[in-house]
Length: 249
Image (cartoon, rainbow, N blue to C red; front, side, top):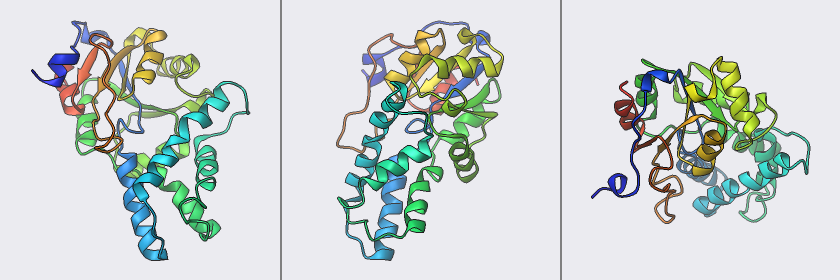
C-alpha cells in the first residue's frame, strides 16, 4: 500500500464548482532549502567562509514562523517578509561566520528568497492547472519578492496575491478572505493548495476547498515531512502533475 493509500484519500467533489486555485509558495512551489544551501556554498567559496550551509538554511527558515507570529499577535506592527527575513539573517551572521559581509552582500543574500528555484514539476504542473482554473500565488511573501521569484523561476501565475494585501500573515483568516474577495469568488469556489497542514487548516476554516501536496524533501532527508490525517482535506496529491490529473486539467 502506498503512502497516499495508507494515509489519505481524495474526496468526491464537484470540480466544476472550483473557480480558482491559490497556492502557498515557500516549500509548496519552490525549494527554498536547496536554493539557500547552493547560494550559501557559492558565497562561501567566493569569500572563503566555511559554514554549515544546511544548518544555516534551517536556522533562517526556523525564525520565519516566530517572526510572523509577533505580527499576527500585535506584538509588533506590520512588517513585510523582506524585513523579517533580514532581521532573522542579521541574528545569524555571527553564529555562521558571516559577520564580515558588506551591507551590499548582506542585502544580496537576503534577496535569495526572491530567487528560489521551483520544484522540478511545479512550472509544468501550474501550467496544466491553468488550462482549467485561475492560478494565483497566495503567500506570506511580499509582492516584490513574489513578482521577482515568478520572473526568475518562470512561474506562470494568473495573478499574485500576497498576505501584504491584508497586512496580516497566514493562517490568519483575513488573508484567505482577502484573496477570495479579490478573485471575486466565494470561499467555497477557491481551492487552497499547500504542503503545510496549518495553512490548509486556515483556509478550510473560512470555507475554502483544500489540496495537500506532498513535498517530502522540503526540510531535507533527515526530517519527516508533514502528513495530514486521512480525510483531512479534499485532495491529497504527490505533486502538481498528480494534482492536475486528479482535477481533470
